[in-house]
Amino acid sequence: MSLVSEANVENRYEFLEFDCTADPETISDVFKEFGVCVVRNIVPTTFVNFLSLASSCTLKALELRSRFFRYDGSGTENPLYNPFYWARLKEIEAVCDQYGLQVGDICANAINGSGIAKILYRYFGTTQIDIVKQLFITRRQVPGVVSNELPFHQDVTNYTNADFVNVWVPLTSCGKRSATMELIPVAIREQLAVTSRTDSHHPTVEVDAEEVYARFGAETSYRPLLEPGDVLLFNEHTIHRTHMPANADLERSSVEIRVCDHFNPTPY
Image 1: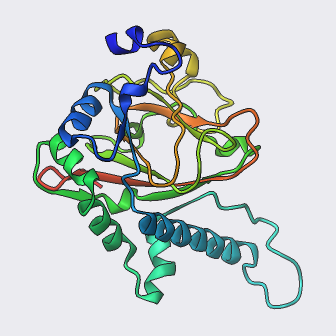
Image 2 (image 1 turned 30 degrees about the vertical axis):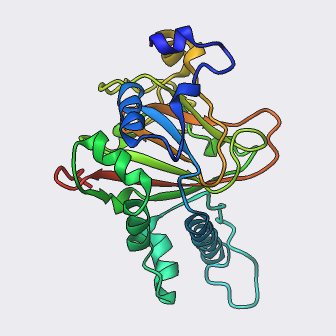
C-alpha cells in the first residue's frame, strides 16, 4: 500500500488509471498488485452503443412481459410486477437472437479484438481468454432504489472457486450525477465473512462496511469517475460495492463481462 500512502489525497489513485495507449504489461502488473485498474477510451463507441441498446431493449422486454402478464386488453396490470434492474446474457440473447445478433459471440470478438485482451493475457499468463457467459450481467442503478444498491462484497462469494476478471463496462457517465463503483484497491486472495445483520438486503454476500474500513482504512476507498469507452477491471476477490452520490439524479447503466483463462476455465 506504499503507493497509496505516498500519493497526495486528491490524486492518490491516479496510478490505477491508464490511457488506452499505455503498455499492457504495465497495466496488468498494477492490476495484479492492487486488484483493480481503469483503462480510458479502450472500448469502441460502436460496441458501447450495441451493448447499451441490447441491454435497454432486454430490460424493457422483461418489464413488458412481467407488467402485462396475462393481460388480454381488459383488466389491470399484473399487481405483482416489480421493475427490472438487471438481466443475464441468456435473457439478452432471447431478445436479440431473433434479429440475428449473437450477443455472446459479439462480445467475445470485441474483447478479444481489443487492447483489453492483451492486458488479460499478461494477467492470467495465457494466450487465450474466454467470456464466462453464465456470469454476464447488465445492470441499471436508479437513484433512490436503495434495495438495488449492492453492499460491499466479493464476487467469489457467489461464484466459489472461480478465477476471473470482471470487465466492467460503463454505458453512461458514472460518479458525478449517477452511481459508480466503490472499490478497495488491495489485492487479497481470501474470502471475507459475510454479515450477520438481519436487516441486510443482500445477506448471502454482504461484508459489513465497518469491518472493511476497520481492516483496510476508510481512506483506501476508490470511487472512479467513468465514461462510456472506459473499462474498470477487478478480480473475483476485489472488495467492491455500489456508490450512489448524495446528489445523484441520473440512472446508471453498465455491463459486467467476466473473463477467464481459456486453459483454466472457471466452473460456471
